[in-house]
Amino acid sequence: IFDAILNEANLSHDEIDRIKAILGAVLHEDELGFDANGSSLPREVFLPDRKQYLELDWNPMVDEKNLVIDKLLLAVRDVTEFKKLREEFRSQQDDLISLAEIINVPMEKFSIVMNAAEELIKENESLLSHADPTAVANQLYRNLHTCKGLARSYSLKQLSNQIHEAEIKCK
Image (cartoon, rainbow, N blue to C red; front, top):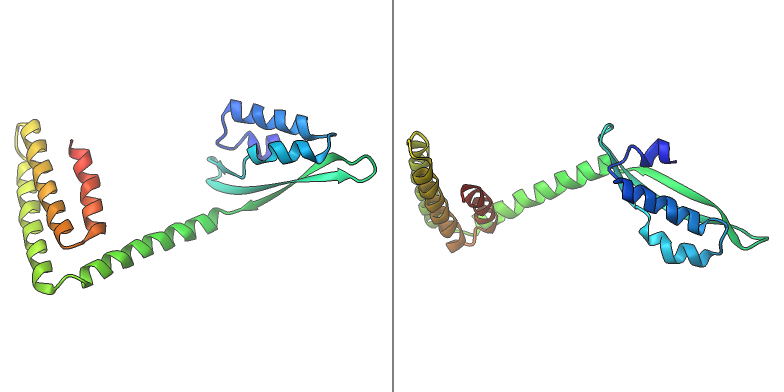
């Protein structure tokens, strides 16, 4: 198990040692040990070399004669595609939220926002050829801040969040 999955996973040496310690503590003991420690076992790992996400489900197998855990069944499921699809879905959801926000703004007001944003973008493009990087960064920040304010004033939350992220990079 360690060679096949856990040593390839994005786990630290400490996390691997903790897993080994938990497995050593629960095997050949009653189920109480697993009940107390099983939640500390990883439920998902990423294998960077394979670019693969695996979901792990740890299940104690009890020896009915001695009433102790004699094995652990580890069910492994590749959830890489599921995670990709979920991320695509979230991205599409964000796009739909953005569209809904735009639709809710009257056309003439949205035009004001877009015209102002275009002017500020042109100014920012012109600033990038400026020689003083500090002055450029400060003005870029102010322009982004103005765009963010315009977006917020018309409840364009998605747009204002994206502008805010760009604004942080200019600081």
